[in-house]
Image (cartoon, rainbow, N blue to C red):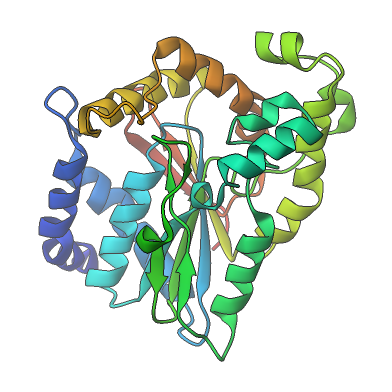
Length: 309
């Protein structure tokens, strides 16, 4: 308890400043201090005990769209850096999306639905595997890593990429499908929404995505040292939170015709591509994630279950 209070006093200012930067006039965070004290500080203490300064400790952070992965991972980074004095690098699997040009090619070669970013198959796995390998190397050298601009649905220009100059002690690798496992082939037969029913009648898209999880993504995720899962109650809550996220993006974005801000119909349609894997994660991930962070309907942390001590 003493450590928690001491840590909170040290990180409070920076954490609350970050939270404020994420708020809008109509959308304020509630119970901020409780979230930091009761859940995020104990989580950071757990990570700090596992971290080995000789090589990076890979923390996978997963959760459906709108669960707060960016906010949570950013606050974890602040606490680990400020109080535990660890070098922390945070990156999203989203930053490794294939370029729009590459996804156009994939959509022509395999299935038109691959033009939509998000599902396994639309990320540059080789680039991620190289990053994991290089960052573990004893001969670590400066790394440039991509950043993805969702507003234009393509990578940023290289001058805006991450510039990793020193080997981190902790790498937070976050994303909606991080750590996801494939389905059994027989469950792929049944469509789960209108998009699958209308656009994937021959199951080509579903099977390809599932095969990616069985092979390349399995290899990537096997390198994570632990996996934290932000668990929402159901998929309709995620839809609600994702719509709120899009409204924030609209407020923060410049009024620029190049920026593709989605309306409600677009968001709900976009999320149908995520639905199958997300619902499979609801069922299976609590059985193998190291830590399950349960979220209530108000988008707040309700409880944390540590499965892997």
